[in-house]
Image (tube, rainbow over all chains, first blue to last red):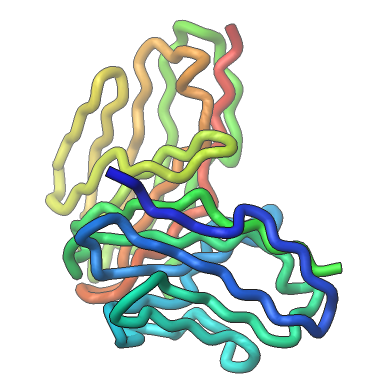
Length: 115
Length: 112
């Protein structure tokens, strides 16, 4: 069973470019969560999606950031016009059920570096 | 805003020593407490999920307890081994249907 797959592992962008981060959840999981880890910080929640729906985007900056989880294909976290402050590790997690007692299964993360 | 605090921030122990660290959370409106283990260059992996006051979970040499009345959970590692070296994260949801809020973690280094 493949786990949560994230790609790319490393992404380098220049200021002003767009970054697209992909996440394929575990087989059978329809709940996807994106977290960001800034240097010396913990995992910060960004957005929670189910298939074709954004459930909670309270942790996502209102400008330049968007997320989707289409009916077919991976979840995408998109950052437009990247700035140096966007440099961070972005982690995706998935769960089988929508329950606070469900364990999250994490991907290996995408390290975004903005030059 | 839910604050999940972990202490200590980092810990160095000798192989064979037992150790423990703390996760603190607001005792009001408690819903669940998760522990994750995060090895360097790998993904966080779930250890335990606890919901009931007084709950105790065990997995090999690692165990966890939960006190919802006073707002803390302890993670214990008995007879630490070098392979236990990792960052241990705890997390809790702010309400009954919201995603997990994580603490900053306790970084454990076990010296052979």
